[in-house]
Every structure is written in C-alpha cells, then in structure tokens.
Length: 147
Image (tube, rainbow, N blue to C red; front, side):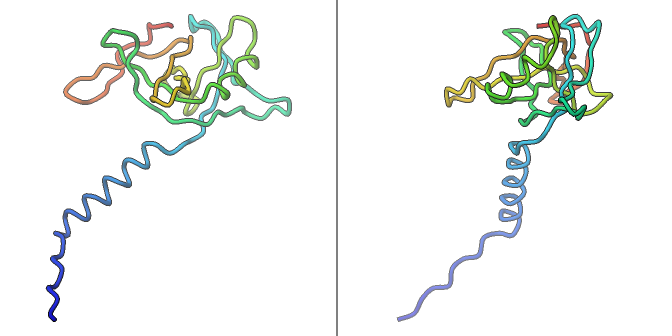
C-alpha cells in the first residue's frame, strides 16, 4: 500500500499566519500604565503615588475607542471594574484617576470592562485628547474634550 505525500502549504501562507497570530496577541496582552489624578477640566493634575511614594500603576490594555454616538475617538486604557474601584478612592476630592504611558502622554481616560462577557465597557470621567481617523490612520486633533 502506497501513501501519497502530503502537499506542503505555501511558505508565505504559513508566514502570514504566524505574523497575524503574533500581532493579535501583541494587541491583547496586558500592560501597565502610570496613573495620575486630574480635574475633569484639566486645570490641575498630579501623579498618583502609594504610601511609600512609589508611582501607582494599573494593568490593562490600550485601545482607541469611540466616545458616545459621535465620530469622536480617544485613547483609553481598558481595565477591570475591580482595578478602577481600587484607583478611584486614591485620588482627592474633585480629581479622577486617568492613565498615562509617560510624562508627555496625551490626555486619556479609562475604559472599564462591564464584566458581562461581551467585551462591553464604559468610559470614566476625565479630560481626553480627541483623535480623528482619516484614511484609516489616527491623528490627534485637539485637547478640548471632557466626559
């Protein structure tokens, strides 16, 4: 009895599959973000520190999200409800926790997972930079938006 040799897949299909798998896992892996406390009108802010004066971080995933029913988009750091509940009381009265990649980051907000298992989230209050999507590319427009 003779067996037919298996056909080999085209090498470019295999490379494409590997690259696609790597890119999708890179976009969904959790990362840390610095946290600052800011006023929703952006008039004041400070880095959130713990009792030992160490920077406070949050674990989540950066995403570009649509704000409301408009064509307004912003960077948001998606975190769990437990993570947001941990951060919220650490900021002073009239300040809200907000994420930052570094000192010169654009103003961003948190997207808090609803926990319903459908990928849903709600956006937290805060000042954020508006992002426009033009020809499939993102670009910062202005910093005049608040939730």
